[in-house]
Image (tube, rainbow, N blue to C red; front, side, top):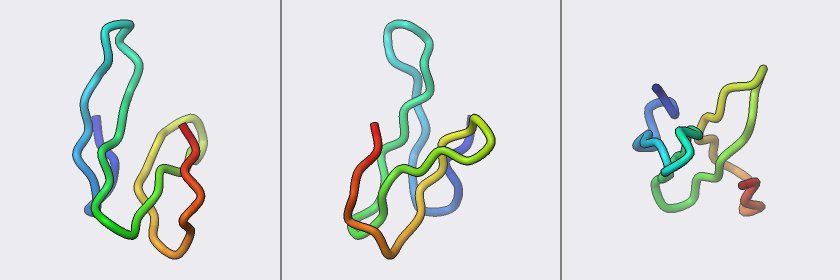
Length: 45
């Protein structure tokens, strides 16, 4: 899986994609895929 260039991707116990983003980046869901994007401090889990 991929969270873009600014995050590390892993899977939780249920097999759901999780993104650990770099400082200043937040998780955004785009077309069903999670990706780390900058500019917003709002975290979408």
